[in-house]
Length: 233
Ligand code: FES
Image (cartoon, rainbow, N blue to C red):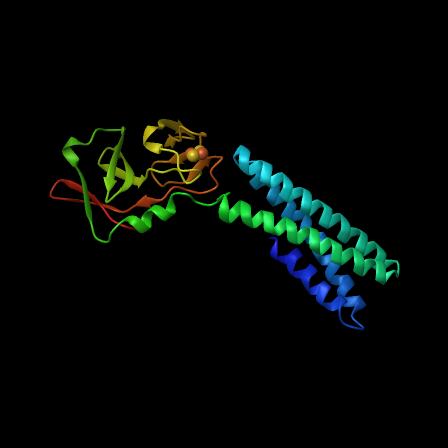
């Protein structure tokens, strides 16, 4: 969602450096300013699911962007009233502010892993082929069992003859789902993360309760000679 305002504002800055481009530059500044609002709402929604450290950085990110949007709103008003010189200046300062905001947002996503699936990278450590996990006859009903595949931790949950195998590390911040509780939520058995309470359906991995914004990865299974096996999806 941020691509529209950022693209519009950068394009407007380029046009501002060229002669005779006042009108398209004004349209792009307006487009960027209007489209920043839904992006901000989405950002606020993301922010609500962050950890304390990430929220602090998120606040600085939001503050820089708020300054930028305010400057662009002023730039738009100036352009519409015929003061294009002022509009251009405010636009360039606004671009500096939102660039700082974008840099901080990048730090949040790429360095701090905000709203990034923390468990999925575990799959790279699993080798190809089927891996034996447990004798079906020894697998208890409706109980979380933790096993290792190569050095990747997975949890097993048996319900009747169906067994779910999912990655054990929570996609939110790598909490140990194997130490979580099984709870019935909306009629489905779910594992609840012991760290921050995200809940994932045990028959599909869908997240039904945040703060995780990602589903949990389920692994394929088969039973071979009474032995439960799994492999990479
Ligand atoms: S680590 Fe935060 S909910 Fe699991």
